[in-house]
Length: 123
Image (cartoon, rainbow, N blue to C red; front, side, top):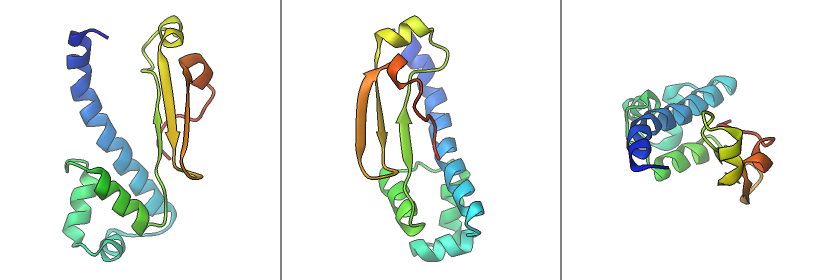
């Protein structure tokens, strides 16, 4: 990847990543009928802090995400996958990795083609 491509892509990733995490939290809360006040009580923080976390504007640290997951008795599933706009031949040449915490720690590495059939995204 060229420096220009990296510089162009970084702002997009900085916007999309927090949005993906907050969407996953909101979806989980909705499915389990947990409101913001309840999550705040579980975390031992104010409802305002939960609102900040769910806004996607806050700088979400790994500690914050781990705290939310622990409070909800849940785990995040994290996938690092090739960018969807890359061509198949470019993806096959590059290495990729998937790390998931859904059933405990798991790490798999291989070419993009091998990982193409695995689940992608945040659940």
